[in-house]
Image (cartoon, rainbow, N blue to C red; front, side, top):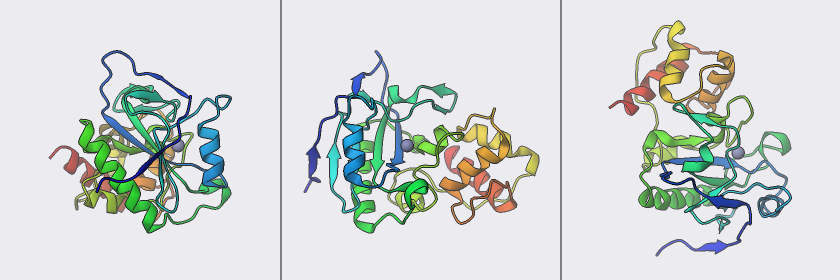
Length: 227
Ligand SMILES: [Zn+2]
């Protein structure tokens, strides 16, 4: 049975640029006190922001913007040499108060709904696994979402995004170049980039230090990407 999606249209969208294929999936947390407040803001013409979907903590899924339209969720963003990533991405907002208002685990019901929603999106668009990213991956100097409590490993096990293969740690001086090959912009301080990487791929310790385990995971992720 296909999942039930509730329409809650937002006015905050416009046409995708001519010829723009949808080839990225960007996951966010809402970072507001409640899901209701987030839904209201994402539908407020004065706020001007939106996403294609919002997933409540109880697993309820709302559609705000049709997938063929450009929603406004990424802001200033960069991945694999491209910028302005709203043009070719689907944005999913996942309700969580976030680091500002009391960051807490994402409930299983919510994660189940996120997984089902994402599998549907991946079935409808040619999105490479390496382009399933966090908002913090594409805006590492501004954003922390969806953060280190988000179960990226579990999603990868379902075929949504990638999780690093076991690998040996490359030398420390290679860290920045490895991050660039993964997709990060490289013109930011290394601890900022390492922090973003860790939030997604080494969540047990997010400290901005490119330690051996973090570097091993960078290499392990590239092994998956370049396999
Ligand atoms: Zn975000």
